[in-house]
Every structure is written in C-alpha cells, then in structure tokens.
Length: 129
Image (cartoon, rainbow, N blue to C red; front, side):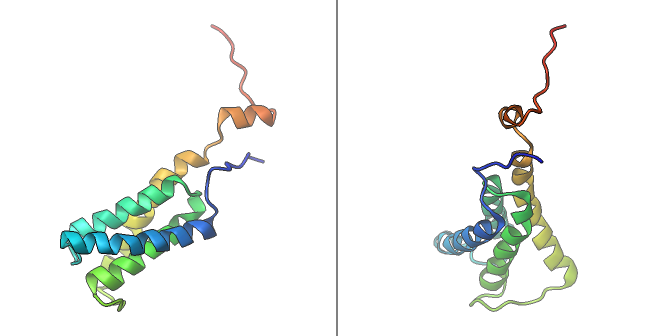
C-alpha cells in the first residue's frame, strides 16, 4: 500500500474547486476582452486546470478538465451559458488539452515521498560507494 499524500484534494473536492475557479476566471477574461474563442481563453483555462492539478490527485484530472471545458464551451465559445458542439475532433482536443494540463502537475505529486516510505518500512538503503 502506498502512503497517501494528505496535501492532495480528493477528486470530489477538486471538481468543486475547479467549478469555482473556472467560474471566477470568466470575469477576468471579460475585463481583458478575451471572452471569445481564441487561444488566449483556452490557455487561461488550461492554466487554471494545471494549477488545480498541482493540488489534486491524478484521478481528479477528468473532473477538473470537464469543469474547464463546460465553462469554456458555454461562456467563451458559445456565449450565454449555452453548450454547443463544434465537432468531435475539436471538442475532444479541448478536453484532452485541459485534462493533460491537470494531469501533468498531478502526477509528480502522486509519487511516494521518501519520508513517507521510510515511515512505512520501504526506505531505500543508501550504500556508500
């Protein structure tokens, strides 16, 4: 059994925080004049997903990406909270970009730390050369 990291959010809490963070990003994009389907808005949502991924478990990456995709699709691409479909390829690419951003920073945190492994009797023995 691998020791769990207490500093990581559970997937359910990560999804809730992702919904709040994605909603909070919209007024910032509006002030900047970027509430339109450009790479800037998508990059901003990817940055939010990556930042949340840093504090989440890898299992939360799809939930984080889904919340980012919902807000990007509903308020940036199609306006007024209406979800639209731009084709399977386009929507899948947007979702996979957001999921990869969240997963990229969630994976290193899921690796066992040596201090935790030592407490559980699995520390590597350092042998001097």
